[in-house]
Image (tube, rainbow, N blue to C red; front, side, top):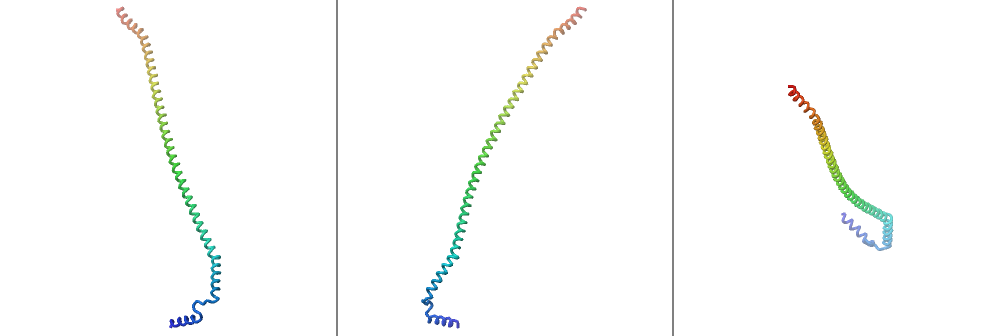
Length: 161
């Protein structure tokens, strides 16, 4: 039954001029369509397109700035690493120089201490030699009176006896 209803509606439309009736309504519909397209373009599409373009530019600029900042940060990190390596080398050379200086100073102090010890030994040896010489002189001085006393005692007992 439905097929018959559709066929009847199509036949009635076909009798009145068909599906596309070319009369004064076509230019009016075309003008209305153009006006609608113009209004939609000015009210919706241009602002929407502008907003999309602005957003795209904003994202692109932020991405470029982020890349620039990243490159700058990497460059700064590289410079920092180079400065750090240079500082480490300098500190190692300063430490090495200080150690060498400390060794030289220690060697000098040891040499000075050995020289001082040698001087003291020589001085003590001289003092001992002087005291020995003095002791020998004092013994020589005492030998004569003692030998006289011994001779007197020996000869005095021989002479008295």
